[in-house]
Length: 265
Image 1 (cartoon, rainbow, N blue to C red):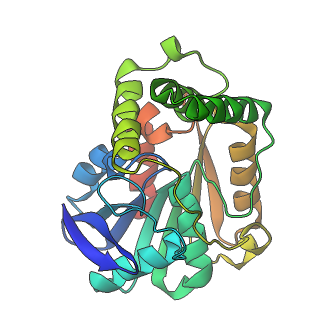
Image 2 (cartoon, one colour):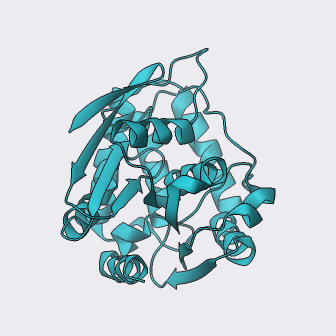
């Protein structure tokens, strides 16, 4: 992978293929390796870009007392690659970043694919998520790194409707490796990125938008997906059966079909 300098740090990124630019933005705690299958598949017809967000993977840490935004980092990456306009494909944090970017720089967004979407300004209400968040905080205080990773897997991979043994072991193992790699390279608490409060501004999004949610995801994420589908001007929604938060890994073929159909629209 290559690197570019950004404000107070650097981003690790990879580009492959030719054609219309498609940028993949990974979920929080993971890294660009989340998109291995999509990166290989869609580079046959598109110029595909993936990168590790600040504080993830091989990119730099967020620096205390030096403000940043993930959306601004994305702009710096596109500027460095001389990409004027692109389709953004996000998952979770990646979707959250894509939404903020679309509201800040609408002229640079060809289309949006918002998978398992978070959104800036959201709060968590699902008891499943809140309970695991408390367990993660306790495990961090105790220095129990393996427990932290296991609770993250339960929250972000298994979801509220499956036990660990009901999830494809390869999917859990891949996410575990990415969580551990990011946690090892970026230990400690990362400063919080500045964000918009995008919830009341979703109606400003005019780019063609595909919202994709897994039927086994949390109530909070399903609620965000409904909000986006209802209020974004040019949005439609797809629900993927037998998938939770990391739905492109849970159901890679179904996700690839949805993405291909949308890109070929």
